[in-house]
Image (cartoon, rainbow, N blue to C red; front, side, top):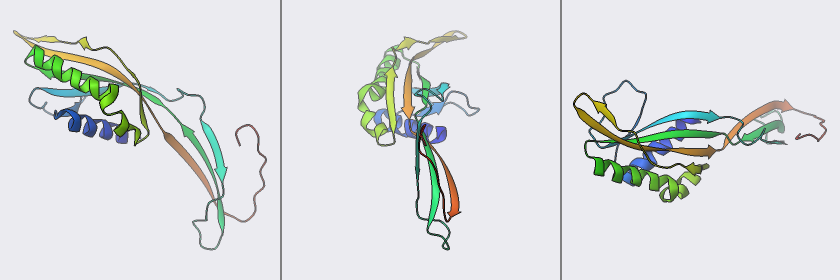
Length: 170
């Protein structure tokens, strides 16, 4: 699920801003400035409790049987992602950082929600500029906390009869 989340964020942010978005921790050459980088700094696997459990009897995957027994748990983990904009010009860096911040604050929320990704919190923009030898590499950035849907399914195939008791989530 994390790979899908990263792909949605990269493609959405690129579509909204027109700037390349790269993983902060990679061994590739960086694109021309300005560009964005991101890093997942925290994954909260049990952010919203133990999840929602359900069970049902879908059509069997085996042609000789009518139903299977399926159990499913739906979780809503949260991730914190740090975004940076890199530029050789401080004003451009601030403008492009604000544009990315806008995407998570409101501009892209509806598109992310289509993929069950919800923006929980968009943090303040901060200066992350570094000195590289005799020049500055302007960096401004912010953190975003996202929640997404994660489903875990367990299927018991070829069940002819099954008895279960409901209670305590199942």
